[in-house]
Length: 297
Ligand code: HSE
Image (cartoon, rainbow, N blue to C red; front, side, top):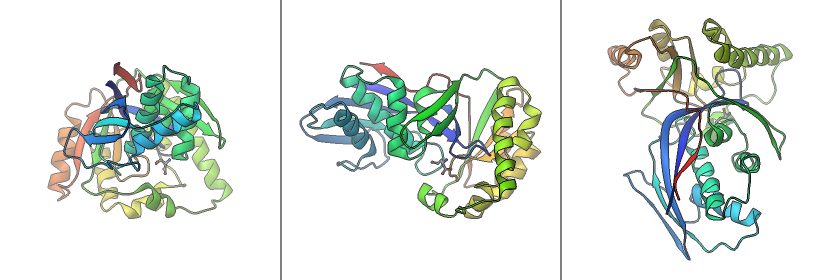
């Protein structure tokens, strides 16, 4: 069996809706080998589809088809640390695992660019799939067929606290609440902040992040779907976060804090519990600059 490590991802980063995303030091693992049947299971208590509806399986089969290779089935073992439907890229991790697994089994017929494209075609947008594959912070434009992207590695002294609630929010629901049109001034509001975000993150101008994470395309609408989100934002800023945003489609909220902001997660958890928000857990991560790795072949 080959074994693959895939990072969680945090997309949008505030204003960069469907365009910006970064990989986090939080991993799923997938073991895979060719088989003449479908044999899928979890190594943990997380229930996953064990038939042809499994997203890792679907993605792997897609890659076999694209390469014109005969496909009979797969044996897949999933270790599912990334919580599902929480805005941390669990679906993208499955897609990327399936593609990288199948590509490895076939002797790497596709290059990383082609896998980035295929992953975005399956997911519909590239802001989780591209950083899951490539690592770092990824700026991406998907033209419907091809992803035009830049990956930048990040070595700044920041930590990313994922504040994860005990409820799910499906991406379809979190996209359905968005308006189909926005005002020109709101578009300018967002594009200027999205550009400010990556430039500030990469150059260490962290004081800009609080302005850069504001947006008018998705967060105001999604806030309504995430009970107590406003309180969580306030608590994170009270503890010195540089910037706080809804991760991907939510409901997880990410707070960016200085490496020297000691016990940030512990202080957050204490304040959340004091505010009666004890269904939220806080996990601290760093940016993963490596992306998906085949750790044994
Ligand atoms: N950019 C996507 C969204 C990320 O906000 O809907 C979630 O898949």
